[in-house]
Image 1 (cartoon, rainbow, N blue to C red):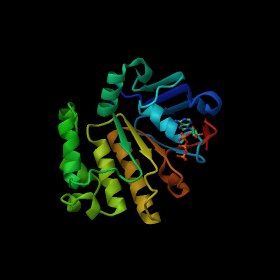
Image 2: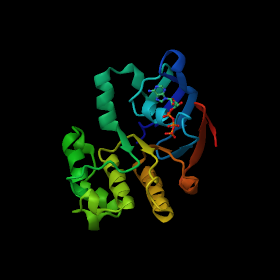
Image 3: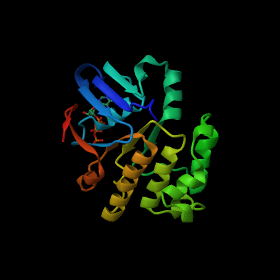
Image 4: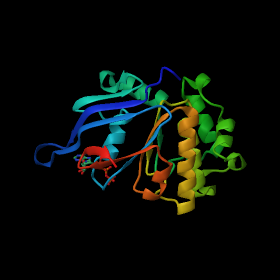
Length: 225
Ligand SMILES: Nc1ncnc2c1ncn2[C@@H]1O[C@H](COP(=O)(O)OP(=O)(O)OP(=O)(O)O)[C@@H](O)[C@H]1O
């Protein structure tokens, strides 16, 4: 894991829209997230949190500044290289789990192993499902799982292929308080165990205690929260 340096954003500026509707979504943002570190990003609606995830996840290229994952400059890649880097090295967890309806919990993970050319270095789907406490639900499809269980499967799926960076968007939005704590505790544990740099956007101040660091985004600027 010594080759890992995590996520580094430096002086990242992103402008969206054009003409009169142009918005500076990110304004000279600096952020470093080390391997094994869980950093929360909080802030009001429209502050730029989704844009921060998009830049970190190689979905949006900054207008100024640099975004690097383990020393790889995302803007320096071709579109095709960026897509491959995203697929092989970056994991995403979304609000609702975003699972494929027709597949069982175990099949969701197996599909990643089959699609990723780096699967040899990836994790064993059944073991990973056990890690997130879902072995007893391995044969169930998403509609047969609770919101918290779907999130667990989503987190396990994102960790297949050993990503260097994990980007998590509002993981507790659909969960009650107890499930929210469980899911973020799981994220914190897996972040440490997998040595992955994790960024979590959340509105849920209840779960911030499980994070290593909290930053606040306001009007496209990031500060210690
Ligand atoms: N395609 C676009 N064109 C123009 N402006 C945009 C576009 N997408 C987002 N914006 C603007 O950029 C700013 C940052 O948006 P962003 O989605 O990153 O905020 P956010 O903090 O994630 O908000 P929320 O918590 O509501 O999801 C907002 O002012 C938004 O209106």
